[in-house]
Length: 139
Image (cartoon, rainbow, N blue to C red):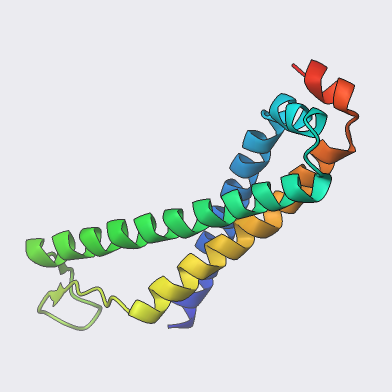
């Protein structure tokens, strides 16, 4: 069972890194919009909060969508009654059964919301360091 925990940690790390990279790119592509908000008088704290809340919602909704997709995939696998080859020393094949634990859905969704919220702080503060004129001229 430890191997599944290890593999799960690797997958969670990869998902967190790729999601953080995607979030970084989306924020950096909106530097002009952030500059326009700053020019209109929006404070830096308000912009950071806006970006962090957006990231948290994306993490929450993405986590929920992933849980729904995972549940659907597990239901399809169960409906197909897939059998695994027998382990060494056995003759009969084993039925593939996936356990769906609601607690896992909760912590994975929460973890994605937290990871994306934390990842949003870096590009948000980087975008706020630009002067308003530079942000508006950013290509």
